[in-house]
Image (cartoon, rainbow, N blue to C red; front, side):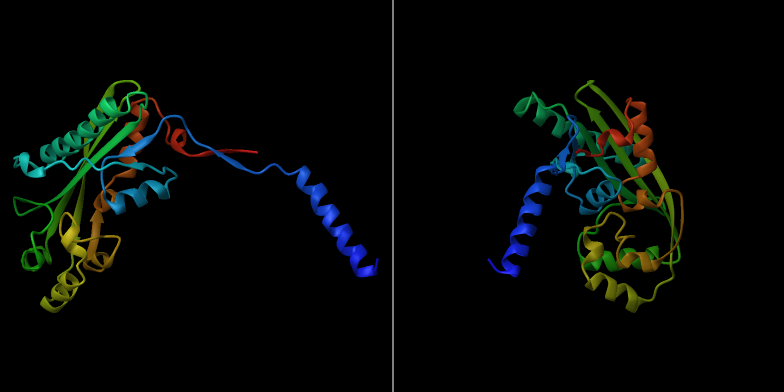
Length: 235
């Protein structure tokens, strides 16, 4: 056997010996699932950023069934209804699974009117022509249903949004991207819409669709810490 072959054989043997002492890291997840009753990519990303990787189960609730002029009551009602639908689905279809379910809903309140998603591009342009240079209030309702304890909480967070005095050309260019058409309030703070917001007063993640500080307080009220929903790893 040549020198090169001997060295190769020694290296291979060392690798086999070392591998016997190495135990692969296996993820060990919490037994209580966290379910997001929403199809919102922004809400999912926020949860993932703080270490919570939720199951996604949109409620498909028809929001037109709820008529309410007060924005705070409206978003809390919608959030509760969405979470309740998903909770009932688990009770009926997966009774052995006892998740914590989060439902959310957001609206913009401006000039005494409640605004959800725009109906079409023309509506989005009209909205921005009213919003520019103004201050609106972004309301997000948060509902948590804990099937393990059979408890529920509902709260709302409010953030004041100061909109930039954008031009007609900027409005049209923004609407043409399609981004505001799927957003409550007709803008995405975490996207191009962030260019057209001058200032926020209050929780900024609330404007994205989920107030992380409020979620932490609600979890604590139910007896949990946020780290209870972080995946744990064992060697």
